[in-house]
Each structure stands twice: as C-alpha cells, then as structure tokens.
Length: 293
Image (tube, rainbow, N blue to C red; front, side):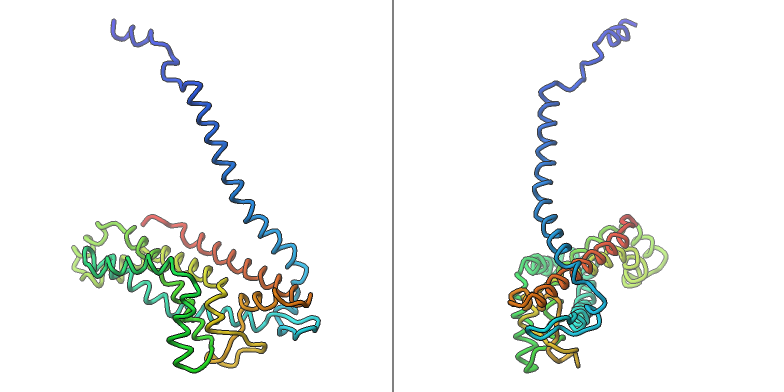
C-alpha cells in the first residue's frame, strides 16, 4: 500500500517534454517544411512554365499533322509522338526480359555467389552512367554496324537506361516474398524452378510492373542518346531501321529555332511528355498498391 501511495504521489507532469525540447522540435519541424518548400519551388516553376506555354498550342492538329518546315505555320507532332512510343516500346521489349531474368538469378539462384555480387555492382554503376554514354554505346554497336540511324538503335540506347531500374525494382519485389512461401512450395513437391515461376514471380509482379513503368517514364524524356541513334525525321516513320522523329529530339531542334511556330510546338511537345510521364507514374502507383505478399 505504501508503494502504491508513493507512486500516486508522483507529479503527473514528470514525463512531460521540457520547453527546450519542444522549442527544438518546433524549430526542426519548421526547418524541414522550409526545405521542402525550397525544393518544390523549381519543380513548380517548371510545371507552370510548361503548362502555361504549351496549353495554348494544344489542338487536334498536334496529333494529326506533321511538323512544319522552317517559317511555315500550323503543323503537328504526329511522327514524333509515334516515334517516341515505338522507341520506348523497343527499349522495353529488350530490357524487361533481361532485367527480370537478371533479378531472378541474383535473388533466387545466385545468393552468396560472386557472380551475383558482380552483377549487382555493375547494375549500380550502370544506374549512374550519363545517358549520352548509352547513346554512344548504341551508336557503336547498332548505328555503325547497320550503317544508319534507326528506331532500333534508339530503342537499344533506351534499354540500357531502363535496365538498372528494372533490375533493382524486380530484386526488391522478389525479396518481399516471404521465404516460408518458397519452403511451402518445395514442401508440396515443387521444384525450385516451379516455385520461382509459379509462386514467387506472380507475387512480385506488382513490383516488376512498377519498375517497368518507371523505367519507361525515365526513357521517354531522354534526348542525348537519341541524337546519336534515332537522329530525326521530318516525315512519318517508314521502318524500324530508318531515322525516326521523337518528342525529345523535336524539342531540342525546335527550342533553338528562331521561328515562333516551331518554338510553340516545342512547348507543346514538352507538355505532352509531361502528361505521358504523369500518366505512367499514376499507373505505377496504382499497380504498386499491393506491397506485401
């Protein structure tokens, strides 16, 4: 009883936070919000400039007409839109199988292996390589060997940029699947290959889909690698092995043009890329909702 009475006699505010700690916490919270606001300012200004300058030129002709010649009025971005979709699709077709298979090996079959550790090291290095290096790589192995610029060369360059994102995201997705699930699959008689392809891989599919969409979003706005591979084409694409127009290269060409109409189309192209990346990011967020197996 004495112990109980002594505990009840303690002041109720003995565990209260001191005024100095409250002040310090408020100051640091305000500092964090200030840093966030400063970081948002450049992003907000870019979005404001792109939207205000590009929304005025957005019309159905942008999607149905070809880019205008120098000094001409009107025109659209039909070939550049199609070229961007084609090069991104080629890049995804090349990078997705290699990226997913690499992640499966490093996570499921190469644990503790020096080869897997070397692959992870190369992936980390590749994720920091400038995009222009990927363009030079594709130029050397595709453009020089085939004798011309093409959409395939552009897709190869974009696949190099997409590969690290797909590998790292797929690895995290495969690691998120509990080990007990693998043991349960083996316990009912499944082989390691069957447990990976029929249990682990479907469970990690939301992560893999997220990595693919984010990789495509990054590749859609690249310009430097496409200057060395796709080049540009004023007309519609006639084949995958022909020079191809893309939105990013069109922005580069028209932004330095002295003609107002081409400058306006450059802003419209920037707005379309922004909308494309935003749509892909929203899809990635929807796909990645299920984060726990």
